[in-house]
Image (cartoon, rainbow, N blue to C red; front, side, top):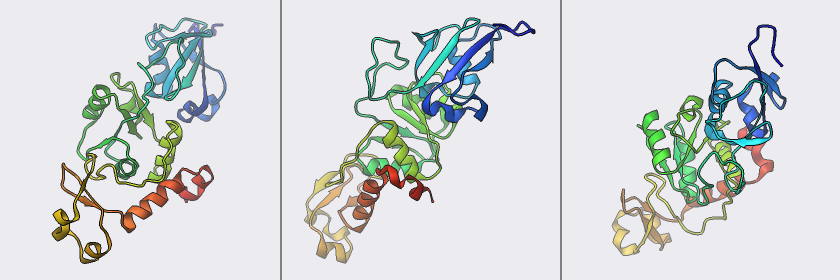
Length: 261
């Protein structure tokens, strides 16, 4: 089908959470995209606002294609979100393979989320001073999922794994990540990562850190962890309990609206 202007049409349809990036009139329906020139399907997808790392499957006329596929007049393009924990072979995967143990790099505005992810034991790089080019390089070189609220950053060509956070609330953001990548959080019984620098924590004898502890901690606690990178000392005190309860609470779907209030 072509319009009277003789600009050929392509028909696009986006599924599930990819609709979050679209204006209401294009959500959950097939809509017309005017084909100008010979764009790749990646270019067409990003032209309407959907960052390519959010996409894991593209069907052109019911056949799976890669990002480099050149859109043809009259094509019907169906676009699906990431299947990070599923193997959808033998159709064309748009990223090399699922990450069985997800690793993250968080944008500069996601410091609180990075703390939550590290406390939960997830390898999460976060730097207060890190420009877009460096974030993209880290994501690509280390096969890390880039977490951000910057759509344009996610459109950088070298990024293959990324997620656009819909909420500005760190607890809801954590819930989004858990849901998106199908992660479960058993109630922590031991501290695993430094929430300041992401290094693995090591158990340390109480005597070795005794003089660095507040008097009440010296008296009430016997098990301690030390960060080998920044030398911060951790113990399972009231802060640990509050964080553990928060992680347990944030996993519960029925609490989503309550957390956002």
